[in-house]
Image 1 (cartoon, rainbow, N blue to C red):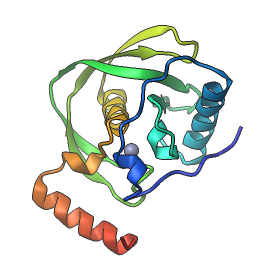
Image 2: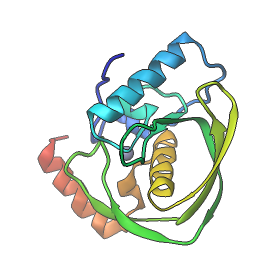
Image 3: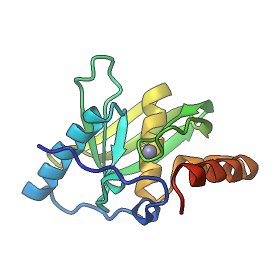
Image 4: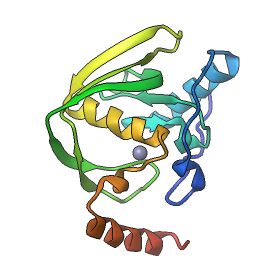
Length: 165
Ligand code: ZN
């Protein structure tokens, strides 16, 4: 197992769409294990493959309190969103940035687990928010894209100060 480098701020890979995974082979399994290791090493709740520079439709997450329940979702597809949630979010690719983002409260999402078996997850609250954040990553979107324009511009200025373009 190894901890992977997390791509940050304006890295172009964060702006690219991940590709569908067609089979779970040894390489995919290693990537999943390494992503989980990276998630825990960074104290994150969710991580998308784009964030470690791999354009494969894979997310890992753990919203449990004891941090011992890693979950994997391959090729996730959002089926349904309902209600509203407006809570503070951070991102391992944007360290030091925490902003309130509008999300759906309820989420129904399908995908495949680490054995390539179909799974459907229905969730609300934190888990719902994390999955919406991570599926955005797979689409090449980041959480600040969800902010109103003025807020986004202010934040981009701040980000430029943290890391010059
Ligand atoms: Zn993120």
